[in-house]
Length: 146
Image 1 (cartoon, rainbow, N blue to C red):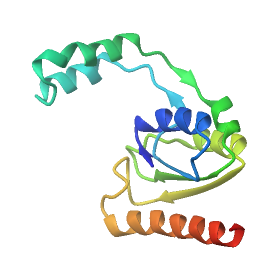
Image 2 (tube, helix red, strand yellow):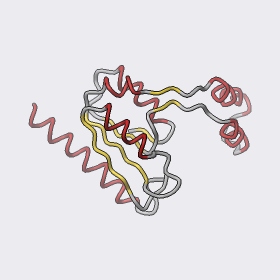
Image 3 (cartoon, rainbow, N blue to C red):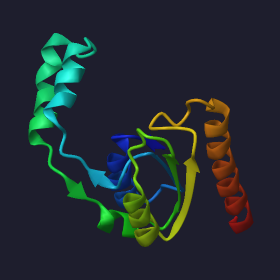
């Protein structure tokens, strides 16, 4: 399961790894982002980054470039659940949802209409239930195959 900027990394990893049984991707397009300077500035000023590691954040931002992951999506032959927010603030737009539908073989799209990017707000249980249903469906499929 991956959320936000973790989504492109999870897609890339799952496209190479043979032992992945399914994937849950939360509110982010299938694109490595070009990280804006405001991202590194914001993270550096929050005080979460140890003094000796600040170069990592600035280096990530400096070296980032936008990269599409359509090929990696087409390599995934596993069930994928895409969860997106329906309110302003959601980072996964319809154009990007269409890309998931076009390139994935087994995809379920779930929109939480009352949420933005923070999919668990305002209804954490609804977010958990969506994930639970997907995982149970995967378990049931595995039992039928086994």
